[in-house]
Image (cartoon, rainbow, N blue to C red; front, side):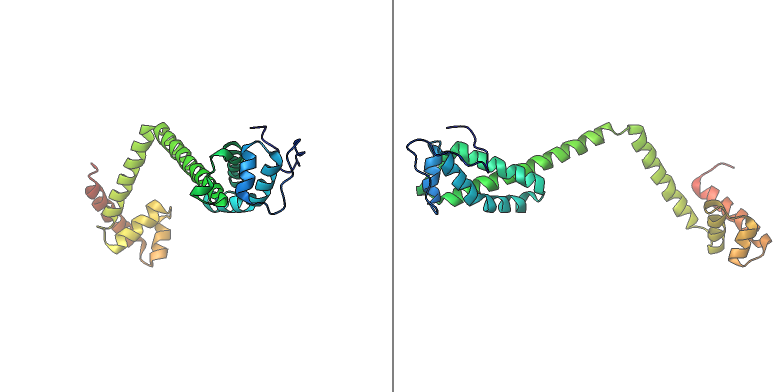
Length: 201
């Protein structure tokens, strides 16, 4: 087999090898490609590349990778044309089978690479960070549960003052109650919250 011909650069016919007839049978062209006929390969290339790229694009999706896979498929056609057996199916079916196999291999390779990167990232995560994040979630859940045990006024007062930064005076204005009432409800609410969360006074 000769060198891989560059697509788009027309090969000169070799001595004694006639140029492929327009519309020549793809199977016949592959037989000539198997003997190293670059002009026959160019005819094969021109005849199958749109269908090959279309199939590969549907499987791979990414345009740049689809172009790479298409070139890989045509390189495989050039190198393995001698393996085509007309008795087992049409030449186009053989080429498209190569294309589908290459496209699926590229998708699987990309998925495996993504999984390896994900596993590496997970392995590099600091265990202390994971533990702290878990404790934070547990603590937030405890606070949420304990806030739910307060009366509505207590819960609103505590939330506004301690989680949203309002002063007692502002809380009283927002809730429409007397300042003294807010202070009393806040004190009672904090005591219940402390007891619920098991905090020592």
